[in-house]
Length: 97
Image (spheres, rainbow, N blue to C red):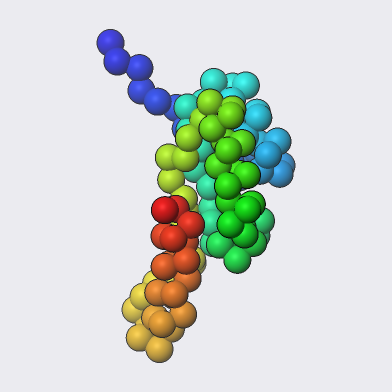
């Protein structure tokens, strides 16, 4: 029987990102999912150096990213808001890349 990979949403641990990564690895998770719309893991907060450090730390703990969550909390149904929302989405996609 195939073993399905186990991933965790890091916000579930209710602690900082690096502590969560260590705990996820200790629990035997294979991957993590991270909200990237605001806070310490948003594109605005993660400089290129911080992005490299975070990815290196994830890999050094035997994990990988399964997803970045881009739930902005607003839909694209109001055309006047779309330029801002599209730009935010592009920054999150660039972070994922």
